[in-house]
Structures are given as structure tokens and as C-alpha cells.
Image 1 (cartoon, one colour):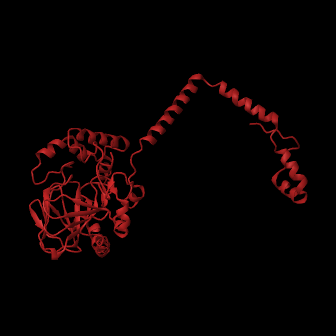
Image 2 (image 1 turned 90 degrees about the vertical axis):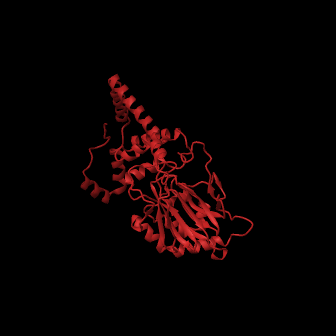
Image 3 (image 1 turned 90 degrees about the horizontal axis):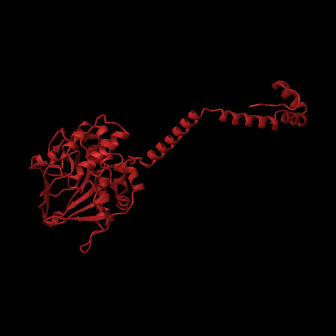
Amino acid sequence: MVWVPLGPQRTDCLTLLHTLHNNSPKMSLEWLVAWSWSLDGLRDCIATGIQSVRDWDTTAVVTVACLLVLFVWYCYHVGREQPRPYVSVNSLMQGADTNGLQNGYVYCQSPECIRCTHNEGLNQKLYHNLQEYAKRYSWSGMGRIHKGIREQGRYLNSRPSIQKPEVFFLPDLPTTPYFSRDAQKHDVELLERNFQTILCEFETLYKAFSNCSLPQGWKMNSTPSGEWVTFYLVNQGVCVPRNCRKCPRTYRLLGSLRTCIGNNVFGNACISVLSPGTVITEHYGPTNIRIRCHLGLKTPSGCELVVGGEPQCWAEGRCLLFDDSFLHTAFHEGSAEDGPRVVFMVDLWHPNVAAAERQALDFIFAPGR
């Protein structure tokens, strides 16, 4: 680039400052003229640039152009295929949409839903999701998940009848119907400290019940006898905004739990109410990667939880941890005067599922995949 001064040579800085101080208007004009672009210099600069481009080797130009096209295509592809962001339970409410909500409960509307696909195509879908995750991140730490998906049919079909998850079995996890409080000590203690907060919000909700209708946001579950209703804050990894607004303190508490499953279809948080005379049919949960935590809110006598043939009773203000991939049932044999059995239920990660595995499982079983 060529600078062509039109007047005398540039004055040094000290002289210029001194002169500007003494004769500012006159010298400012001279300084501007001295430092102006000349049209001839600008024309020479442009001509030199054009000639340089013309002198380029054709092969070099084609190579640079191809690399530029590939870079643009890569940016477009990565942007379009960006995986679902992993967000905390606290931020789920902001992006949740009410499509598919009936009475505040998420019902599956897709025939391709992973949780509802009980056929040979499920394993292929899971393996495809795992491959997609590994391409974007890494295969490191994916050994158990790869093994589980590859032999999923054998695992689910050959499992003993006492434990048989319906959707996904992760091999080599310690197996037991019940877990001690120390399995997820931080979250258990946090829930128990907030027992009164959760109970107060439940009692406010329960005042809306009447004999003729089910209040909005509650779901009636099928049972052979009695009534079992649930009020979901998070259902299958999806926040229920309307319900969360009715229990704001309980909802905020979920964001403080370290091991709450909030980003895949195996994660739930709800208030579960059993009326006197209710029996829940024996059933299996969908997976063994989680621990189901029940915080007792109201626990009259005559109520029991049976997991893997082992009975346990709830206690108010205390957490009970169990693996719901075992055959389990619950019942309330108390009288009408005893009132309902009420627990706050939240799904936590199994303590032996590693951090890398949790991230991969969130991706593979993300809601809507």
C-alpha cells in the first residue's frame, strides 16, 4: 500500500504537538492534508491487488475454493444436526411445550417412541443413537452400553422373573431390590430437609379434589381396586409447566438434586396418592439404570411396598430407595378414616452408572428421539 504525501514531510510528534498548541487551526488543516490518501496511490494499490490475484496459480485457487466450500458445508451440517442440549431440570420448564399434554400428563403420540417400541426395531434404533453419540463425542466408556444394546434381546428374555426391565437393561450393575440411604446421600438428605415444604404444597393441591371430578393436572392410573392418582412435575424427561407452577418450591428443589434424571425418558418426578383399598398390579419398570426414591408425605398404617418379594413400609419425612426394574407392587389396606397414602416420587441415577454413561444415555434416550 502506497502513501503519497502532498505537502512537506511528516512532522515529528513533539513538534506537531507544540505547533498545534500554538497554531491549532492552521496546523490541523496541514496535518490532515499531509496524511490524506492520494487518488493515484489508491488506484495503484487496487491495481497491484488485482494483478496479484491474476498471478495466482490456477491449482492453488481451485484448492482454496474447495476447502472453503467444504468448511461451509461442515458448518451447515454440524449446525443442523446439533444434538439436543443437556439442560438441568431447573431450565426444562422454560422450553417445554404443551403439545401432547392431556390433563397435564404426557401421552405418547409417536409410533416410534423408544419407550413404547417393543419390537425388533428397538435395538437397531438404540444402536443407531449410540453410534451417533460416539461420532460426535467418543466411544470411551461406552463398553457396557454397547454390550447392553448388542445383547439386549438376550438380556430381557433370559432375565429371571424377579427382575425384568421392559425397555433397557444395562449389564454389570449391582442388583438389589432396595438401596440404602447412602446410595444417594446428598439427595436423600436434601429431600428429607424439605419434607414440610413438599407436604404443604401437596395439601394445597389436594384441597381441589371433589367427589365428582379429577382436578386438572392429576392423572388417574388403572388399578384392579381403589384409586391411584399422580401429579407429575416431570414426566418421561419432560417438564409439565402448568403443574410446576402450582408447586414452585418443590420444582426448584429438583434443580438442587445432584442425581435427578431430568433429560431422558426414564426420569420422572411426581406426587403419588393411593386411596384406602387400593392395590397396584405387580409390574416392572422400564430400566435398571435408575433408583426410584419415595419420600413419605402421609403414611397411614396398612400400607406396604413390595419389591422383589421383600415388603417395606414408608415413613413420613423419610426416603425409601428401590430398583423398580424388579417386580413390585404397592397397596393401601387401611380404612377410609386413615386417609390416603402420599409419597413424593423422583427418579435418581443408579450410583454405579458412570458420568460418561449418564451423558450417553441422556442422548440415546432423549425425549422425542
